Length: 302
Ligand SMILES: Cc1ncc(COP(=O)(O)O)c(C=O)c1O
Image (spheres, protein in one colour):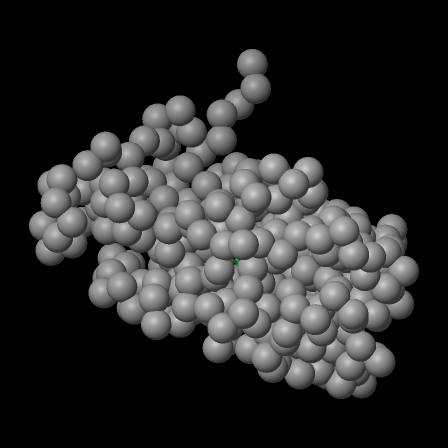
């Protein structure tokens, strides 16, 4: 029989089948909580510190006190991978408001619930070209920055789910959402980039985007490669007429956008800038300085 995965659950490791939350948990009842999706590559957790920072930032904004320190939480992530003997994995780190009553009042929730799931996941990065996806522009608008926007990575993903349903119904891979001003925001679970005349642009935080860890790393990679890169307002017209469009995210990594709403983007395949960034990013995720090692090898002195 296949061995069950262990889930870190409020300080203990429990088998997957026994890792259950209460029906009174406000994470379930109200989407009241925050989370992270993290990736481990070849025995190292990619940009773990960035994810931990973002989790604490999201929690701060919703007045949720994470019961352990950033250091302890990082250790718990690494320990979860070790416990499951994982080297290449997808990690889901969740903190909910915890058990309360049926009312919305978070003050009535006793203790936050904290769990970490780690599952094996092989990377799609490598020498081959990135996947090319077909998209539409969603009729669902990204929640604006004065609402509970995706700037905070909360457990409420209905906005993204509605956009994904629209993509499914249209028979395409994903939706790109506009913000309340009608400017480009992001895709359902990825950030958006466009390339025009070798200048790379991506919507700024005013568009209610999640401040993607992959996005941030790609912006600095562009600078390292001598590419002009800008965070700015992007109109749907600019997106449709770009030479290249690509998406970035921890789980999806980098994907080229071949089509938006039936309109071919560039060649409809993988453009040269996307390809270059993809190739460089494939190498970068394996660099020790980009991550936190899971299995620290002890050096034996002679
Ligand atoms: C709404 C949204 N935007 C963007 C991203 C990409 O962020 P990251 O690169 O940190 O995974 C995600 C990832 O889950 C997301 O959910």
